[in-house]
Length: 288
Image 1 (cartoon, rainbow, N blue to C red):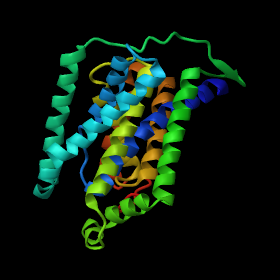
Image 2: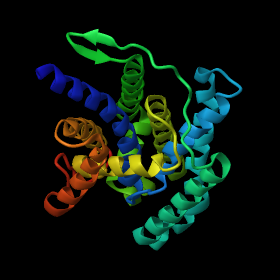
Image 3: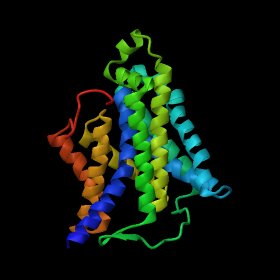
Image 4: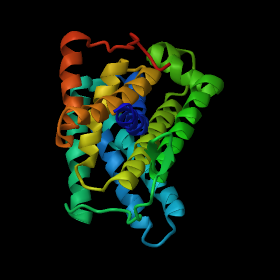
């Protein structure tokens, strides 16, 4: 019985590391621009589907590069052609615009690839056993990729001038502008990182399961729950929130049907909004 629960926790940590990528990208945008980008979920789906497209003509490892490049362009385009001109009109306007953009991107994806399930076509391989716990090569790849990108983000925020600028803008955008920080460069960096993390996470989810047009919305809700859990704008809280969501939904399989696994995120969103809207690890302001 102990091995069974240990297996669920390991599965949850792997899934949670990918959810952390989604949540970190979402909270980066909120930390700087103070709005939740509902179109963030579609970047998850576009990253996966663009990889599927390029993998038809390139080896999978190479197909990831142009797919992520185009995903980042979509993310930057969201801000440049939609959000930037609406930023002075208030958060509600931005929120409504992001919901509309989400529908547009999702249905464009359906128009191109259809609504049927798709996959990268990897063959299932026997997992590796560690003390009775089985870990597949796919899970190792997912965890390693998530760890690399999160380590990259840590280095960027802590040891580079751009990281200092991001934190300064998150603390006080007006004061940062007065001090001469280039908001265009900061905005470009934020949207690049957000789209990159979403695209990488979408690819990893596609490797582990299947691709379908609603995958963006499903994983956006998990990211949103992780952001609420960690405290909006708190990057490292979002990381912990993602891990918590992954572990919680996998442990839930021991008590409920796997079909209800996604309900964990919905339940957490409702509970957090009711009893702890600042999050369990919440910071009042800013990217940390």
